[in-house]
Image (cartoon, rainbow, N blue to C red; front, side, top):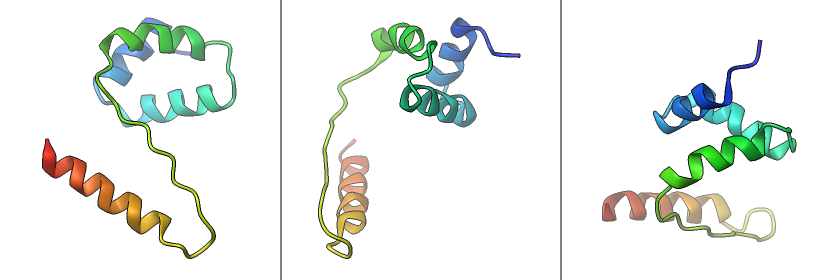
Length: 76
């Protein structure tokens, strides 16, 4: 049985890893509930950074992203 959108949004905002995982999958799959879910959590979002990293295999993308994440965590 699907979880009600308001409950799901509350779970995502509370940091529930499973709810967040389901939300990511729903958005990626263009699930009909994903737009409503995003609309409910959007007012609570902060000032996120979106960074795209591309490159060939073995170029160091994962290492770079790991360092960026560590740097951002330390800066908080």
